[in-house]
Length: 601
Image (cartoon, rainbow, N blue to C red; front, side, top):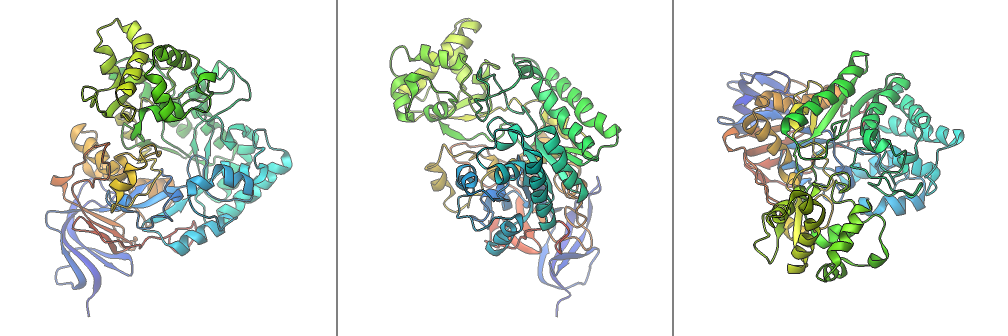
């Protein structure tokens, strides 16, 4: 009889804790690592010769929305391909439970979950996921949108009463007792938590702190905002508040995160996808971006930490954010927050036809300058150079393909001001008129662009994907081909963490591989969620492991076919079971729904 179920021999080991790699053997039995070191002469049911490979703890994605779709694709193919074995869901205020108000759930949540709801409480939601099974280890936050929607229903666009706040705190306590790891929040306009008061949030966080939970905010005014001009007319991405906050709102939103945690008995804080607190829109050097990032870290992270707040943050793993191939006409239409009369009830096809007509460029310019359109993650009034962030991916006009909208516009040879404020709209019409099916992709997210390396080097930083979809590799290309306008179908879905590792350790030389691995293993597990047995290679840790071929580590950004596996990921084990073997998915569903304080911690 073999001593162990799995034995990985002669492998380079990055244990998730040390900054120096070692060499040895790893033995696994009963889903846990039982021995690490020189195990010469040991026997196992399955033996892997690790020569030429590097063993790391399974990667932990601290910022995802994969809880939305993992029950539809339990094998979690696109996560396994990039070595992700653990993920924290329920971010940005948007958990799928509690769900006490049917009207709110049907209006705001059911399309995202894409399955019939069989739950009301947070415990029932986790039980449903446990019944379905998951291919990775899932950890959950409860969202303030779900709390407010459950109590206030569709009348959430107001402050809660004292009694309603008390009821939200009761639901928060239920969720924490059921195994939630904390609470998430979003202050974006239009979502239920946009109207939450400081007092409401403080009371909810006091419950979170009571159970050693973590507060993870998508901070107020995180997006590029523009004033709507109509008080109370609030749509996602459109700012509604004091006019002065348009320019300092992001700083105050970030600062508010620590302020409310201090008020809530120093509730632990983890800021989601941090951005520079000060925004500079016009073209500028990377040096200025680095200075903005350093200033943000001093004010938003270091100062509260010096006052005794347990604070961490994450930065996105790629600089194109959630960029994906999308139909240009459809993207423009979906970004219109308040439609003018000429655009009422218009479809994407009808807009494309309109863009081929004389005079449409002027109408588009008026629409953009009114501030009632959001393009990707940008508001064009606040950043008139938004057009350098989009690249044409597919077009019947091959002269357009592979170029940014800015490159096409500036090639006209007109003065800069005329190009930015006039020629741009002529170019948009020209591109769509040449091919109504033309697509583009968001390739530069200025919220983090040129700041990521500065952010991720900070000792309190970790890295997340902000992933919203789980996609099976088999049939993925066909699935995406019919859903090009679906939110979040970009290359990062399949290879974001490997892109991060390659850029951080090779292209930019920000840190060594052991340091980069620590950011996505032990740090999120132990520092953020207080999990002792995840994110490390040591005895008694759960056997979540990734075997890499360092020389083959690579990624390929192809927006037309994002379903490409990264290079260099050879094996992935989830709780001791192979989910990826010699680069091939096994289809195993060996993950768990991990509850705070439960048996699988």
